[in-house]
Image (cartoon, rainbow, N blue to C red):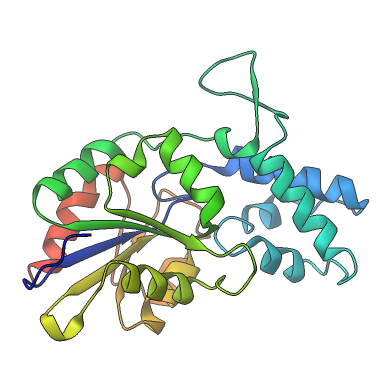
Length: 240
């Protein structure tokens, strides 16, 4: 990335539930993982809570025994990244891994383009492992819309959202002493809490997977209901 001495306004973007409607592929892969380890699948409300946190954290929250955790995680990763078990929404009749049973929210490309044109530095910061996030971003062209894609590590050393945010900031040479500012944009409590831990605010996106009142109770600086509000909300935040 080009070195600059001018202060930058950085927009850190969550992926699942913020840029992409990813629940069919994620939840389908979770169901396959439960079937693999022979444990009953949680109800629909609990399944939706898998979107946002690291997958191992969600399995632990649902009391998967420690001795079955590695098998559950491996099965999830296989169905999500490799095994073509799900209908392809772009090409009916074809089968794809869970990561491509997915789609951009309408209006996201236009909103990101307007922010990029206005001079904001855009970076994806997701708790999804980076090796999974990058193919998704490439598949939907997100990588060309942003300045970088940063995610969790495969080995578990970087899984919490605040760890990912710090990693993204290091990678883009974020420097508060120079006057750089950052805003997280996300749809779950993990985005809000992760941003706050790092000293940043979070713009909440209600079109994603948050439960009722979740973004409010965790302290999102502002909550928007529709994708077409994104650009103006970001500009308003940095214009305060």
